[in-house]
Length: 210
Image (cartoon, rainbow, N blue to C red; front, side):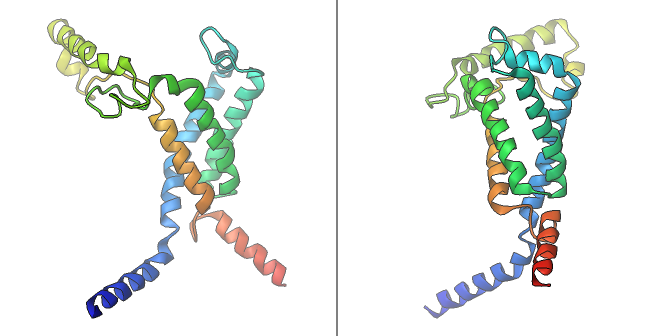
């Protein structure tokens, strides 16, 4: 019993000592997400007309109403939101429109493709789950055949020198992961010591006292 008590005390003491660095986790989330969001927004901005057309077209696009407005909001959320995430400004508020953007992407773009971003028929997430997609199961044979053709007729070693060939499945994996990360930031904020939010809140509290 004494050993258990000592281990418990050591654990609590260790947690208290490392809690000063608890802002590190949200900082890393912000640094990971910010360039992804900025790049996504910048890409949409550079091809804004095409983005708006894709949002609105029901034949080969998303078929959403008010496509120009929604495309503008998506660009603003990702570009401006990404910069604010990087700086740690209004982190909780910024996370909301970005989470909405991820939900729209999940349910309007990626959901029919299941979970996996890259087709991998050996994954347990591709077989027998609610996110099952038979295209993923068939991808292995197609990829093997493509490799055979490239090895026979192409410069296979050169073609694969930058990485192995894969079949893109475009499932919800990445968008769902980003949503979870943004949800974490919504509850944690930008992080102690490492965000402008933290210092701004401290400054405002001092103003209230004065």
